[in-house]
Image (tube, rainbow, N blue to C red):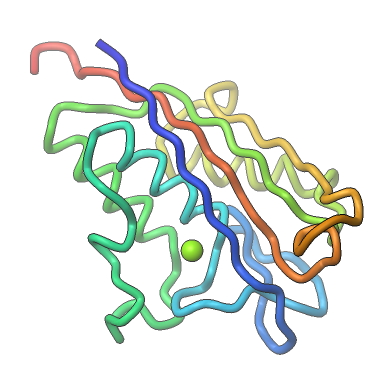
Length: 161
Ligand code: MG
């Protein structure tokens, strides 16, 4: 048995913050604003995993009002989602993410993000895909005011559960 889930997130680009996408720190003069490290990719992935298992959304588990998550490494949200799935007899099959960013150009960085996502999810790299799109100069993404990410996850029943 398999199920699919989708996740989407957007964060504002601001000065004096590190830019971290998919757990990879990127050399860029601005970063994403947020309570945690604001890793829009890992937030979308976490939501896609929770959605696939019918477990709600990231805010149900990691509210941005909780001081424990201030500047948190969002890798922990992904790890917790994987743990919640495993408790219920699910493992991740594959994951696809699309990052929407006018800048920086993500072409040279996609491979590093893919490798890190594969590592975090315990998947082979061919089970992870990372696409990068610009905003074509339109809207908050196109004006470079924000970065967005959409993620789709497939999960499958672990044999014997
Ligand atoms: Mg977020």
